[in-house]
Amino acid sequence: MVILNGALVAEENTSVSIQNRGFKYGDSIFETIKVANGKVIFWEEHYFRLMASMRMLRMKIPMEFTLEFLEEKILKLTNEHKSSSNEFRVRLTVFREDGGFYTPETNSINYLIEASPLNYITKTDYKVDVYKDFYHYSGLLSTVKTNNKMLNTLASIFAKENDLDNCILINENKGVVEVTNGNIFILKDNVVKTPAITEGCIKGVIRKKLIEVLQKNEEYKIEETSISPFEVQKADEVFITNAIIGIQPVTQYKKKKLKVDFSLKLAKNLTVLEFTN
Image 1 (cartoon, one colour):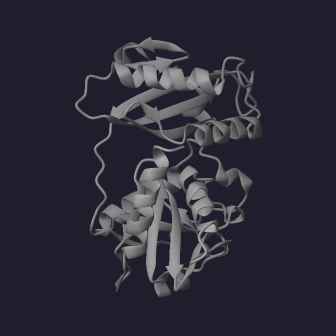
Image 2: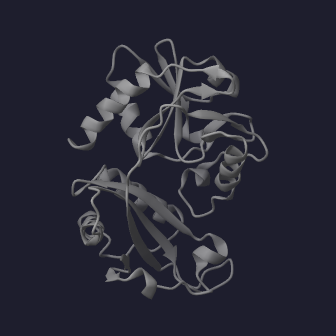
């Protein structure tokens, strides 16, 4: 089952028009959301990021698109699933209505909510390297989760072909931006760094939460800044974040083995946050 424009329908009864603007022009955005034990994790952060993205892309926000309305739709869908899992990956996609070429005929939107059981386990061996074939350009538009993910797709193929678990994307200034499916953090001594939004990274929900946590921690200093691949090479620890995996420690960057103690400690703190926020 899926929810299409508010209605619960069987997946096989849905179809996409050949005029769909998400299909033709990538004129769509999405949120990937975790639901656990009947709770939409960090829902406020996802909701406000979605609203900000829709405004930036000149999409008309429907009057019924309240925080409570969409949360109810998400939980209604996950409750329909006959699954032994109590955790779900939910994707909420918003796309401009059909019509027009580059210039749309309307800014009104349609939306689709999908859900699938989640059985992700943090990997104990996780290798990454830099993807250099194409750049992830810096700029505000790159911070929005649009359906245009060709760079992420090509980097993921590269990772698979080279026996890697993920790839680091870099911008036109050769600065680290993010990985194919999330944000990246590095630890050196007692300083934690993550690429600044101006580098072109997604405004990740978990990224935001971890920055808040670390800002309150007197033992560590958090910096949003530019990071070179060389700094990743010199780091004590590297970890990636997204709404589904939470925190995934990186155990190997190029040929360097990395520690994971700090990353695992943060992951435990995040698990507590998920159910207290």
